[in-house]
Length: 345
Ligand SMILES: O=C(COP(=O)(O)O)[C@@H](O)[C@H](O)[C@H](O)[C@H](O)COP(=O)(O)O
Ligand SMILES: [Mn+2]
Ligand SMILES: [Mn+2]
Image (cartoon, rainbow, N blue to C red; front, side, top):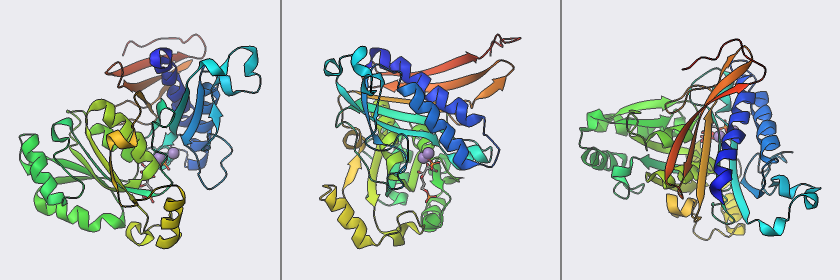
């Protein structure tokens, strides 16, 4: 599945990132998101593939593009019969977040990216738009830290695995009221906390790379982003666990506004029999083939943001494959017209 797909999806995230970056710092989060969605979809529909969106835009708000269930790829288009035989292609599932960190883009802050994950049909957990309690950590701690343990215990384990003191650990936590106790506990255990306003995919991913000075992600973010993070962490051999959060009282925000009972019913209707199950990366991204691609919109810990210049733009992306066992950083110059200069770095 992946030989040319791995290359094409770089362009998919690049185009989304470039489109969104034009709205960087303009205070218009919806536009920054919408243009990324349009650009991602347009480029995706040029790929010779039979894809279906399993994690996409607005599960419940009737999003017009990249909605869950939308078929994407040139072979799913109305005139497809003219140039491709869909029966020759395997069906693939796609999870997208064309603008992960819309607030970050709108306010010119670091850490936003265009991102997607791909697997064969059924290879990605079709998470509902619920919250997810997450624990991400470097490969050395895989299977040793545990989301069921306290933050204090996990920090002790992490320090041992990384052969450093707890005071030499940095944990990323989203700055939310629901994390007040967690932040207190991490600080009391001796570790340092890096609070982020948005963008926990970038934080999870950063745990897999030493040199980012990020050693764990703890706390509750969105479930779809958890699946996308898990896809990358599975390929990178990092630790990732996620547990769905369905009780509005725990998250203390309006996103899952219904009652706990209604949310439990919704999970049961989806066939989720154990709502409290802790999923690991292999379960959230269980496919034989898993591909992940991201392109920085604003600068981040792993990638540069989009930089525009006269006649073009420069992007940095990351494409990860569990088949070729590669994590490839791709630096691209996009030439809209002949540029006056092309800078080497
Ligand atoms: O920050 C995020 C926003 O993503 P997006 O809407 O695509 O710009 C994500 O990384 C978070 O995982 C998540 O969506 C968030 O924690 C849920 O929102 P909130 O209720 O504000 O915590
Ligand atoms: Mn997001
Ligand atoms: Mn988004």
